Image 1 (tube, rainbow, N blue to C red):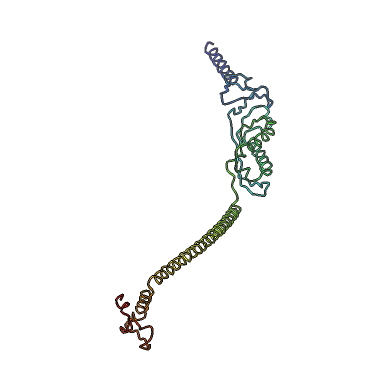
Image 2 (cartoon, rainbow, N blue to C red; image 1 turned 45 degrees about the vertical axis):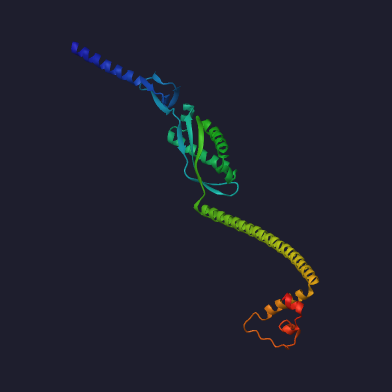
Length: 296
């Protein structure tokens, strides 16, 4: 009898323990929970701690409380200036309303797919309204914030709060990159030609100015030299005139000596003149007057 009672008590304790265990559940700091009864939500628990539910009747669905991220597949986007871009992006989000999230998606995989669709749609719409330079320049942060607001507006109806949207990469397709490279090379070659042409024009201008200055300098130098030569010739004529006026015979003798030196300076000089020519009058000593001989 006592053994039977002990067995019954043990069974009651086991059953009570099982009921107590199934009626308790723990919500951690990184989680939030939805208490379900026959598939219908009964309560939402967002604070961490030990909680209770009806055993064997109610279930608990745990929802992540942390900031999660979803990445989009590499998508092609056409910008307003008809440039094609291959864009990789991602969004960070948290589940702000667990009940609304559960009713909208049921599980996280479906939520990821829905967010990816919304993000791709907003990227196409917003990037399609911008030109390429705005997407790759400092305007990108404003553009990303605008996309985040629009994605968050759609996701908020499902209990999700989007906290950030970013473009990981925005590349041109390979064929576009080659075209851009060819266009950039053509532009640089054109710039180089223009610079060379400008340099040649400047060089020609400098050369022409230098030639002009050279001509002016030579003309001025020739003018100065002619003036100096004229002054020298005038001074020479004046000196000769003065010398001739002082002693005509000596001046005549001196000029004859110069003529002799210039005429018979070479060894093979041959002159055919009459012996009584005036040119040789100083070679004939008989024709030299006593005063002239003394002077010689």
